[in-house]
Length: 228
Image 1 (cartoon, rainbow, N blue to C red):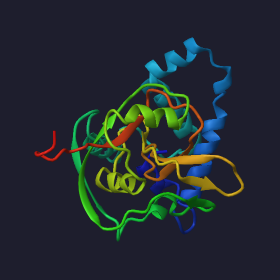
Image 2 (spheres, helix red, strand yellow):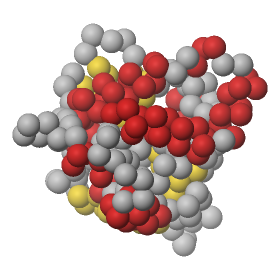
Image 3 (cartoon, rainbow, N blue to C red):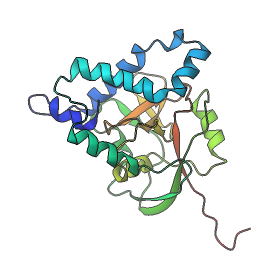
């Protein structure tokens, strides 16, 4: 499901839509019998997540993408570009032009999504970092833990991040703790995340556990020199 593969699997007129991406991700999520895993099994998968992801990718490509050839020039160039995403705990700058980036950009191409959170206006440049905090049972637990690392940003900053770092590195989802998203006719709330190389926003239920593969985007609090 690499971004460069989309050129080989075009429909008659269009590439895969955002709604189709969301549906396929949901199918994959439910296809793995998570509830049958023991704690030991789960730990083994997480510890060897690169090999686990590679196994899934290999089966998928062999079954559904017959034109794909490992080691193609497009694959090599993609893996190089993927190194652009900052390492954990390394500060970097993002610029958000809220006249150009709206919360609705998170669900572009998808239907049924509603945002009830804060909408930023204006243009800002702020400092951020990606942090890993381990496994937590729900997004509120994640939010409490992240408060010691910095400020929780709103969802528009995720689009700014994805715009700057266009190639995912497959080192784990990059989430933002803005659980202000709802899907039609469902009682749950969701958070947006930069999940993989497909390049679309993926929504994850706020009440489900997040493991230590997740990275979280937090704003670095820059104190004025006159402050204590």
